[in-house]
Image (tube, rainbow, N blue to C red; front, side, top):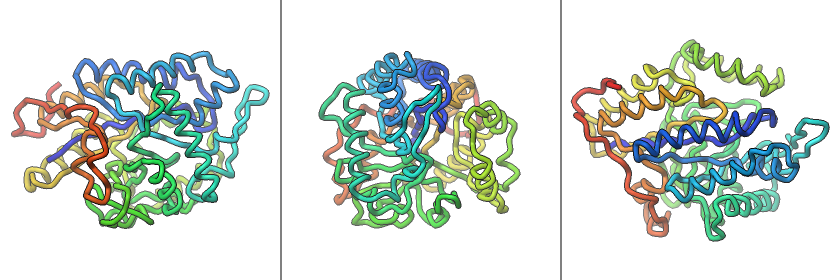
Length: 359
């Protein structure tokens, strides 16, 4: 059985450039309308550290609309997850530009007390944003997907009540940050873990539901749509060393292509899903949560998203959230009973005979 989870990283560019209205609020508003019209929901991974700093320094008047939008997400059944780029926690604004603390780029490499301090501050902020003092997000996505070394950060986050991670992209590497998710290729569609996010552990307090990837020849990564988004994001100001590091990560015959509803064409998205559908028909008893990723800053092609929703409906694939599927993911050690679902997953009603597309 397949359930499809749309996840949206709710953030501006990594160096702080760009306007909230253009890169966050506006795209999310249009996507929310699209999903509401179809009575389905997505997971919004809200990057709280940058929003807190933007409000503190008063750098963008749209912050008030953003706050209202996040509260509406929570009220209207869109799951609000925690997304965290810790280099923002010590950020300051000077002479029209953000100065970020890149010493804290990877949460997992920081001392335990500092991790705890950052997580506590982030949870306080997200509770304020959703206007609910007792709120704790179920799900987490690490900034730049950096959830290694896992043990300390996972322990701190679990102590605060977070249970689901979706940072892993199977087969992925980021050599500049010693990230290596190639070992996860041996794992299934999801797995419990404890000390190492790559290693299934039935006694672990977490469950990993990775961003779905397909290993493809490296030249398939350079699609016109992906390259166009990257070129339009030139304001991101990636350092030459960082760009070269990313190139080195892809200097291998097969690379992980993320199921990205912003950066992939409709044909690419439906072709990847058709493969999953064929597998599901052979083994319908296996639960297959399929996580797709998108970013508000990349979100411009709403026709493709709408058409993907039609494809999923035609093929009777449920669109869900982590909160809705958590009881199916969690074993006794994870405590599935303490999480209330946001609502029932929405199933399509069309014929399932062919994994083709009809708008």
